[in-house]
Length: 229
Image 1 (cartoon, helix red, strand yellow):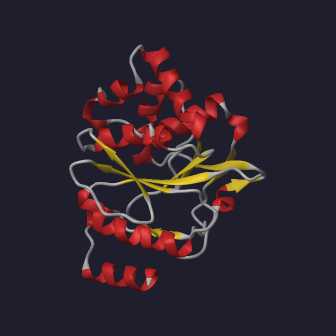
Image 2 (cartoon, rainbow, N blue to C red; image 1 turned 60 degrees about the vertical axis):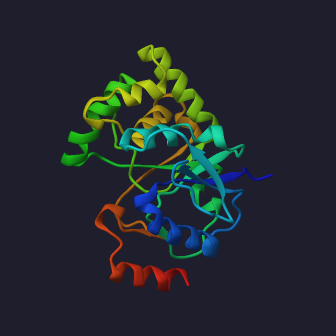
Image 3 (spheres, rainbow, N blue to C red; image 1 turned 180 degrees about the vertical axis):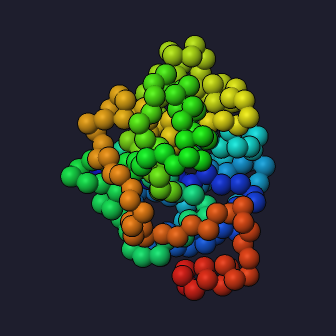
């Protein structure tokens, strides 16, 4: 029996315009997934009909949304979680098998460029107490075994003597990277469970991403309408 996979999206009001197109593209292009779970602030509900909605009571913020993603396992019973961003729009058919290789979840890695090394190297080293050989946040869609979240939480609590939530929220200058730390933990402690795929810049992903902070311009909106119609 194939493993079950839930799609999980953490969103908030400034991204709701993008989220609408993301969900339309999933409905159009996705097959074989168990549930689509959307995590939203309780203060800003949406009337979603095809998705499972999880309302969070925590304040919105850069670190808070990372904590929410690292607790995704608390809202799903699937074997795996596929993390998707609100500003991702799928352009062709896809299914869980696109995120596995030889029965193992694919985790994309790559060498540090100067800016990413400056931003993320010390974050991973501080959290995991080891020197990372790669950057582990190399593509937008990240597939995670459900049991890995609890293992990371336990590791952080044992290593830093505070809960994972408290550790992330205590980082100065918003210096944390959920997927880099989760991926580096998987590399250190569960390497044989994954297929490690080094990114070369020529990959053909079944999605596009515009980065929501740039704004949903009329030109982008028209393009997304065409893709998702």
